[in-house]
Length: 157
Image 1 (cartoon, rainbow, N blue to C red):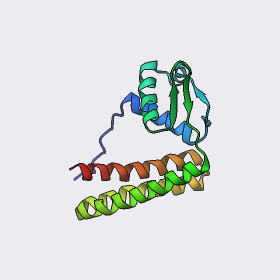
Image 2: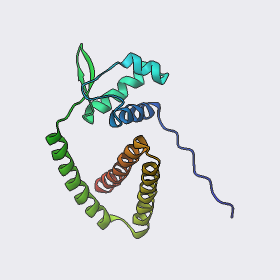
Image 3: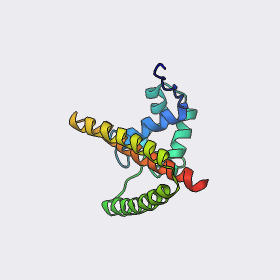
Image 4: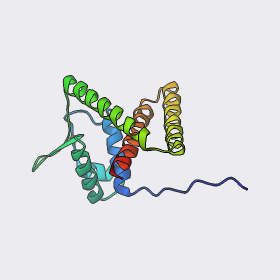
């Protein structure tokens, strides 16, 4: 039997924009407390302002930007204590969530999830060897999102 091709995934425009802005924040292209212009983003990304606004709403919910009415959108700034506290909470939640996921997954589902995470780790290691900080940060975030997505799906079943 010939090898099967992977299906092409169509990613909604809002998600592509969200990913682009999030990556710019994570990698420091947009700095803490910096004002982000919807108009400039739309021009740079070659899109209308509507999907930019949608992405900004999601980023605001995620705590990455702050929207101040009649003033604009700003990259959220955190102090080191807030970051440490947030990381401790995140680690505790991810450990609990993964423990519960392991209990609910079949062996094949768990193997598939581990293979996907190993692929992301391999991408991170390659990016680190290439001194590609943007890809390391992005792939690291993807690994966490992948695990959390799985956990949420399982817990909501």
